[in-house]
Length: 238
Image 1 (tube, helix red, strand yellow):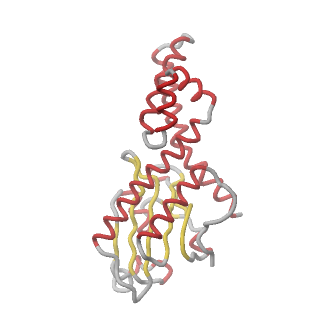
Image 2 (cartoon, one colour):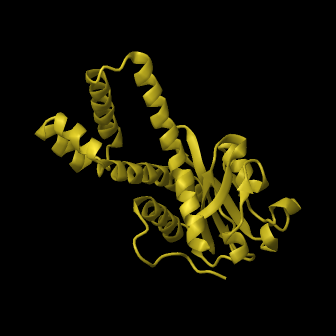
Image 3 (cartoon, one colour):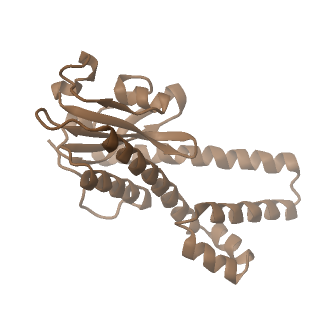
């Protein structure tokens, strides 16, 4: 049985964002366990795996892989709708994860209209069931967690040479504001990078079709970032 992954060396901005999100849920919602599962892949091909947690977690659960639409976590990921069970022992047998019983909430982890994964919180048998208000609180925490993941990705991007040139091209004042507010206002920095990207490709002689194609490649790269993170997590456990 494994305890929450709170210690160890720096695992990067994304992992730290996930750890902070798990800690926020753990500290604000009294419970036996918190798990955050990220999706590897998209749509029906997505597979969920634990990326951060608090509380005791069996190795079986830590290494489990859940397909989109499979089990409650998979269905919540696929639908984007939360699921709360007041008493798993009284509910359908499919909800009794590893025979634990008790009360739990499975909440989608959203970001800009898409679902990155799910957050699960569980209370043991005999403890008070989660309430509607607590479900709403978890929904708010999930929204903040999604934004934290976005900020982590942006923080990594800001370290790149291209980002440095893009911000420099916007002038000292705009660059200073972007770095000072970037983590709080990622959309501002994203727009600055997009404009610089467009200008550089135009000046290099690329046409509209080529620029659109390059933008599509960027989108593909961004959508795979969480999958790569999931693979790094898996290698770290082996």
